Image (cartoon, each protein chain N blue to C red):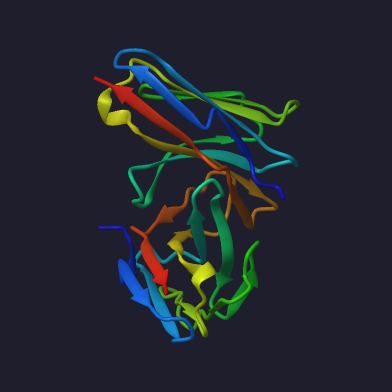
Length: 114
Length: 110
């Protein structure tokens, strides 16, 4: 089954404790991206990757890191989480964008930083 | 920001009625897509319309695109309680940037 898998689904952590949210896709997609969703703000792109070893900042990259060492994985790293990073996070993947490409989303990771 | 704006923010209708949601954006796009989200879960792709298309249908969904007005609308006909969800438009720019609107929360009352 084609899917994007995120882990963990729920996470509560303390300020400053490094954490990683994993994302894996089984569709051989080139493009992967991370979004955060906050009430009233919709989804905002954090980082995206066009292919292995190619990453770029989205609209809200501050406080986040990513890596793309393999095509299927795109982890999101918070080196020193802060309470303003409490949010619902989504990973998405797609084939390299053409005019007809849709994105596939993971089920989300709800992160709380206290 | 190039994010789309959606209108209305919330919509409540009776089962069987039609629901219309609108999306506006700011610059030229490659395509526009509509997604559905159930209660904080992942987004599910509904329908895509290319920048050179004006209307598309899929089941009970009808999407229109007016590039001169930089706007799109999603019509759900004969709505069902199961259509209750948040609906987002997403626009693709330069074939590498994907922007979402803030969403319309639809409530269909049985």
